Length: 329
Image (cartoon, rainbow, N blue to C red):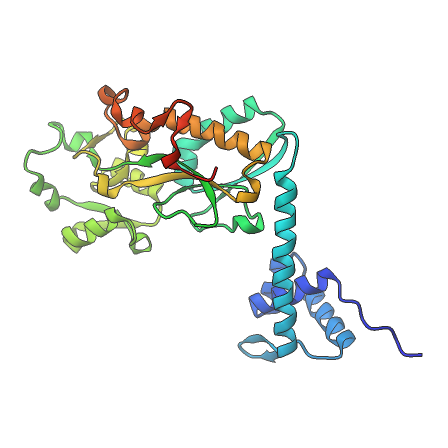
């Protein structure tokens, strides 16, 4: 009597997809949390049971055969469908409780968000926050995170949310180096030593300004972190553009010019459409939007005397940000 056909399990699909994505067994093992020898053994068992090779072994790595490519593509579709199912279930939850995964970057977390997260958790003690740091966009469709807090003028089209503020940038230096404040002759600033974000942030308009208008030999310090940039200006390494919500809280720094509207970036609260009605997500979005609106003068770099003026009120509805600042949330 012939043996029954091999039944492929979901874990088999996950393993094949990991190898196809990583193109090596050690990297695939790291992706799915197994050791190298286990992945090697299971791949051999799957290929033997199916009676076909799923990968060609080359010095450069593992390349899918037609059968392996088909299996990896099916695994991708299964992964997408499972992620969609879990998102829809999360969107139907009844009580605002459980874990909420939030992704943002280090400068926003350290200089702006941590006190707001603390206040939210005191108000909602049944919700636990799992904060993921990084500048790269996480895949909210696959539940890498539930909410993203990002500075961007082009939020992904597949996400919904609200624009809470516009992050102002201005030029800063040490107060001790400018006892009279900003020089009346602004051309003098070009002769100073400068610090700047490096080419990794070439899409930032402040970086483009420095590249275009400041002689390369005067830019003596570059780095890939906004927090480090603020530390460099504060240490006297040079002058540089900084977000106002970071620099204005540092008494040792002084503005060398007003915030430049062309350098500003929108601050967005984003989630996936399937999650926007989940109580914990909705509660978090509403709370954070209200708190960030309250902090708009700091975020946008509005002088204290103008904080109650039109910059805040002109973009506010009766219950928070108006519809022009929202995308389906």
